[in-house]
View (cartoon, one colour):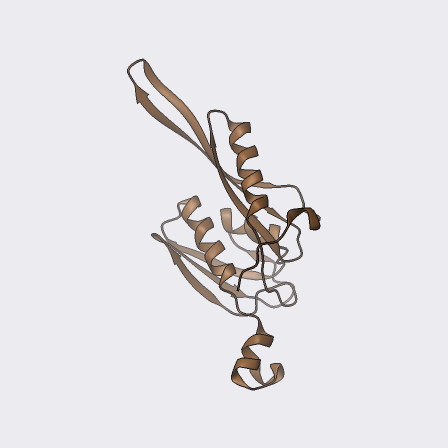
Length: 168
């Protein structure tokens, strides 16, 4: 279950620009250039917002994406600096695998995945991108996967067992 969070209640760290793309439109006089960007904001305590912005210059695109990210903040269930269970998620042609890791492992991730996980506050995790490595699709896949994480307490209640029995 995903709840939208008010950004003014959180102490957000600096935004992290995940990707900036230059796009062009061919017109009769030549080419008209524009930019789109993906920005992630987080507090390092389990909250993450991802935003997309488009404009004719880079700064405007980044600012639009930052404002959009603040409007789309959601909470992630974390356990001891990692995720509670493994997830394999697909968005468009990108596939992302996120796997919990023992303390001291660090963030084993590349590119956009690393930026998002650092913003959330995850300290130990293993990840792998397979198929397409298009940064926008990878970001969407990670967002979909993090939103699908299930809380161990809720799962234990649904199964009628204790949390200790769940992990044994």
